[in-house]
Image (cartoon, rainbow, N blue to C red; front, side):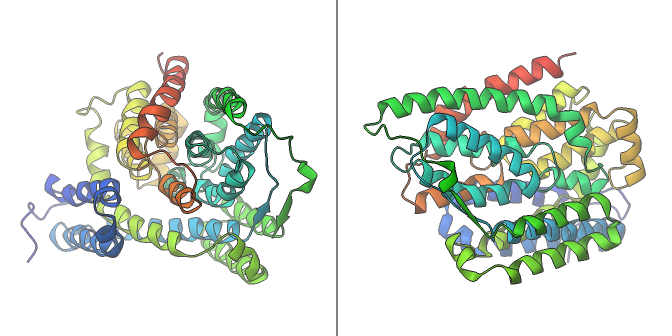
Length: 425
């Protein structure tokens, strides 16, 4: 029998939010303290916790509509993220080493832009190996940290092609809304971090025993370039097609890319579906256990002290760093909508919220995408990049070193400047 969490009404008992907390703690610390057991059993934990919450919603408080909404959102999310993952895995960049600080800085900027076109997961998978190759004569933990900052997190703050912003798109945020309202903050933050990187990389070059000449960009090659056509098709489907056509077209584009790409290209990228399977299981748990959390956040923003864009920015950011930025984004988005007595699961309510204000959503969007870079557990691509670098025997900062030596002293001042400049009014 299900435990008695409360009366059979439409209002969930707060105790049913416990599975969500358990899942986030497990995602954050399971791989760090019990990697072997986590890798073997994490999918079972996701299914079990989701089953508890969905059973409660269906049979105790009889809210089948919430479960249906979450199921549709999950399927759409996995279709889009999976399609970008498959298509980007068919593009292989062949680069020449070595690279100068100026060329490294340009590469990271291009990677930050690309993160908006194919998602931070796709951009991280596509670019991390060329990044290591470019700097193989002097690669340092700094190079891995700044790649995570710019390509895996901050860069993807403009378009909703991956977590966390795609979750907002599923709730009714227009595709171009974030780039229209967040480009200034994005550009300032990217510029600050790139400038710091250029200075540190110049110091790294002079400290290195190797002072090679730059490689020629004309010697770089891109195998599987036809897949950029499939990426364009997916983007066009997201922007212009109605929901009934969007998912089928996206799936067909991914299938076409997979069939049209020679196996050798995917082998060169060490492409497997393992990362996508992991994302699928984890987000099954996140979408399932977040059902009562979203309603709680909608009704509790005032009690939590969330009454300005400044508080939304920092609260979303710090929790995104400590937990995971995708569910944190959705939770605080729900809280922002709830401040106005609106429902995040009603697209007309979301449109009304954005049309009448939307400042809180800017703060939530930037807080989630920016602060996910503060720790390895703040965003899904972070650990993926760390794992690939370790397999390539590249010096990689440890969990604590990444935070104290790189993330806090470099990122927090930049994030604070954004806070003072845009959210202190």
